[in-house]
Length: 110
Length: 112
Image (cartoon, rainbow over all chains, first blue to last red; front, side):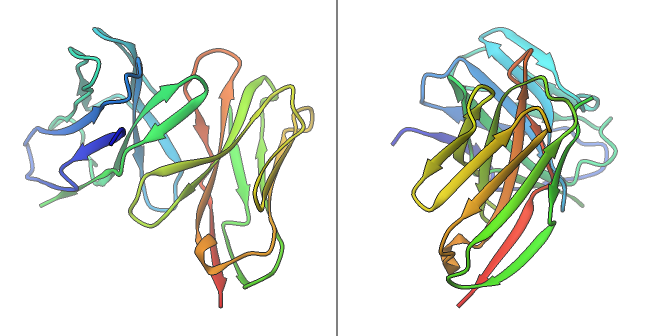
């Protein structure tokens, strides 16, 4: 099946810990995106990548980092510098004008 | 900065009703506008995409319109069904770049 997978579905972070959210796609899309969604809020762009080995900051990049070493993969690391990481994280890839979203990862702080 | 507003924030209707969801945006320099559906705890599914040069798009019971000059879009759902219950998000793509600006969504509940 073609699509976008995100893992894990739930992730727990201890204070001061870095955690990495996985995003994989087998759609052969060049562009990939990471969004954050808070309750009752729209999606806010964290980082995006138009092509392998290149990525750009979005509106709320502080406290996050990404890499794009492979076309299929765009992992997001939530660093200890992100003081309010509790949210629902969505990864997407784009073909033409349409963005395709993964099922999301919910990050909770212990 | 582009601001996208969706009204109402929540809506409850009985099954079979026709309904309209509203989306407004502050900067008319958009490339396109999209409507998405999000089920609880899930990712987003694209419903309709309207290019800036278009006035409307239709898919089944869904019809989306766009008035770029006034900064407004509507999503019309005909003959609503309980399976339509979800959050509907509006997003605009600016003329420059591919990053989308999202509204906060309208939470729809269709009761049997």
